Amino acid sequence: MSQLNKLVERLIVSRVEFVLVGGFAAVAHGVSLVTQDIDVCCRFAPQNLRAIETAVADLHPVHRMTPQKLPFVLTDELCASLKNLYLNTDLGPLDCLSSVLGVGDFDEVKRRSIELPLPIGPCPVLDIDALIAAKEATNRTHDRMTILQLKAIKERQGL
Image (cartoon, rainbow, N blue to C red):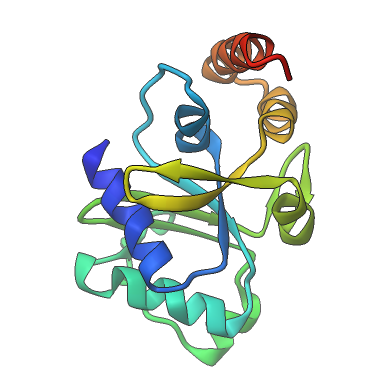
């Protein structure tokens, strides 16, 4: 998990406009399950994509979903066509999404986020209700376990 913290820290330092979503967001809320990647929802504007490129440039990023594991090199054409970005880096997988199932596009995700204090500093994270909605929409086995924990955390916090 410390490697994943470093990856999130790089996004913050590079001023990427993003919201932490997925398993790492659940962990930030107090879920005890372990995650192996970072999922963020971000604005897919060229300037923000260039900030992502800067954040991971020295981490040997490659496109995870291509059979050839092509290096991550942005071009103007690629910036214009990307909707999601799935990378492997030396610090772990990074999934950049333009929207979150059950929540909406980046503007809605941002609206439904809160800032949480993480060991690396304050970080925008999907709020607990939106995270539950996202996990319910995907409805995978591990998501159902996460939902149970998120609901228990929410109840304990009196939310």
